[in-house]
Image (tube, rainbow, N blue to C red; front, side, top):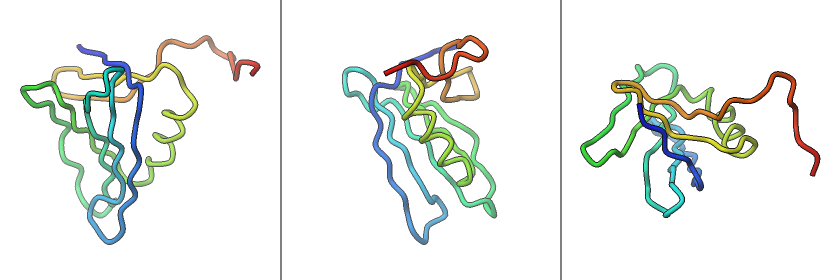
Length: 103
């Protein structure tokens, strides 16, 4: 199991393609560590992949795009996690009912 903290991301929203959205994920050294692809629901989701360099490709249905963007914008820290044959974007443990911290 590997966790790499996501420090930056770039959003792309596509028109007319089978992949409707893409989020590029970067670590603290500006290394491109993975992509989150968002696929139209009429298509089957590919399995997540990790290549020999450690780059991770995750696939979600397009209705999850806003949720993942919200997660990246509002939670800290966020990690790109790889579990051997599956991947995820995860947060650290948070106490129940913690809510937003005062600014």
